[in-house]
Length: 125
Image 1 (cartoon, rainbow, N blue to C red):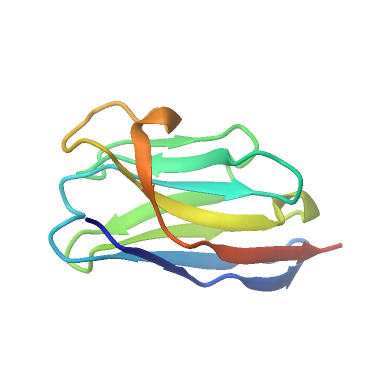
Image 2 (image 1 turned 60 degrees about the vertical axis):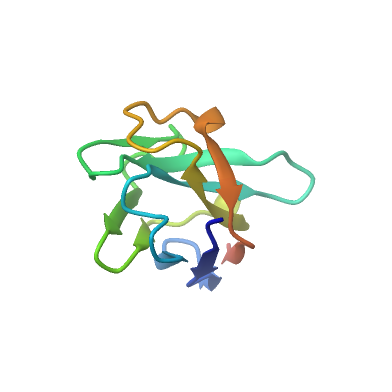
């Protein structure tokens, strides 16, 4: 069973940047697509970004395109989310997630089913 641990959240002013990291337990990472999701207070969890198992392709929610970048380092079993030009509406708990199946080419939000504990991101105006 995969274990995912997010880090890098915090408080930042609007327009600022943060880099989130998600470390996966060994042997459970390199063959799977990885994703980031977020959940704001009173709202449902929403998809943010995903990256294929070999980093050949990425997928982003419209709300973060051009501002956020997902990347991965398979040697370190870690996926990253670089967040630039942050807005107050980006405030949420951010979760990383792993695809349920290995080597899957598509990166649909419903493909992900293993979750970390989340890291809080707060953007002040």
